[in-house]
Image (cartoon, rainbow, N blue to C red):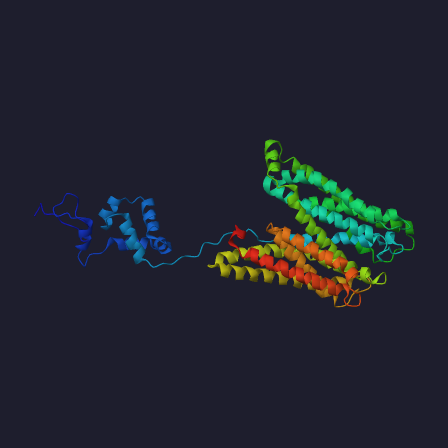
Length: 504
């Protein structure tokens, strides 16, 4: 008996033993009471086998674990790795696990959104402080004194700085803060003279025209400095620069003491906006120099060479110009339509400016929801529906915030609300155009919002020339044109978000 081989149940005979057979025959001769060692392997690799879509994936995993064909034969009684993988694939049912959660790259910061909303709104206090310097007869368009020059300067600066911001953000992505600083160092100072030239071309004769032109120059310089600080992420510095305006606005409603001469009051009204502009320019210059010093040499030249052509920024500037014209028409459309007797709707501009903080946060939120829709969708149609739903929810949220801001700012405006409830639909339609256009720009689709916004601005501006005043008012025209433009932009954005390649 000493020479008799004793076999462990279920184990293959050792090599060279009498009666050793081929693997297939050995697996067929396994007794019914013997355990299959592949069961233990199936239990051990259950997660891998359940997630596999083909047996070759399991075979690759077995080989990565160091199992050779000879070991498969000796341990599990199968001919090779592929036979074992095929059996494992057949035994374990499919159960594809959900992918692990990943960090959301589009998580918006509500605090930053609120801060940016404030820095977009506080400059408007400078107009209230400088109002006494812009007195005089209305110009030939019926606008209050100095309004034409200020509006032309603001529109030119808005268009230039929108294009500059796009190019600076592209430089920021290509070469960091140093590349963005080099773009801003040359682009920001060039925009202010262009805006001032627009103000000079449209300045109406006033008893003191220098006051309006000085304010227009300060406005152009401030917008250039604000663009620099916003692109470089220095919103807090811009907020600190605007504190003099907030201080002046807080003291403005109080009756001045009789002992304070009128000249001192006028000097204070002029000094506070000037201080805000100087503080913003000083901060912008300091941050630009600091950013440029962060990179130079061959790395900086390579980053500058990676920038897109300057014409690529033109649609962003055209979009800014179109939005500026529509906003100006929303505020001054009544005066342009009915003449000097109509009151300008300043709260419209304030509400739109203040809503830009919520708009920016909801842009991030929309991109986050669209990315989540891509992860949950298993078909192209499902992605399109989920993306359109995310777009609709975020747009509705922005319009709800804007609808709350319009009456709030109107109630705080001196003299109460300047217009009836017919103005709210026009402002909401304009807000929908602004938000959907900004969303498309965030995805790099700038030509469509630029063309649509420019066409809408041209139609609204020319409406008094081809539409009889008795048929419709400025609010009705703005509502109809902006609603049509918003529908086009919404459809374009929904189609863009519904494509898988958009989210790569």
